[in-house]
Length: 103
Image (cartoon, rainbow, N blue to C red; front, top):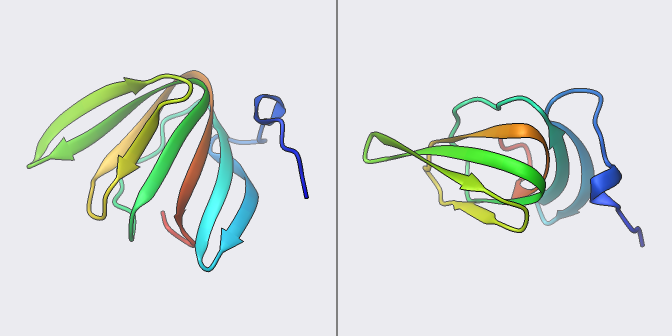
């Protein structure tokens, strides 16, 4: 049993994470960042939940780049094959659920 105060979490580097759970190869991790990630495609589905801060999520649909700003409580679901990149607007704390070892 553990209580995690997500607003108090801060990593020592951008996209640093606290591992919360690994359930049959599906990981749940709390990330802190103040820097963009990199364009990538996960090896499976990804659930991306903004807990604190704001994140502009860029993604490609049929080769066309689009974006949306995610606020606290918003969820971005990347289906298998979705190319995307997260750009925090200031500091952000994000809960990510994905296959173990995914990019």
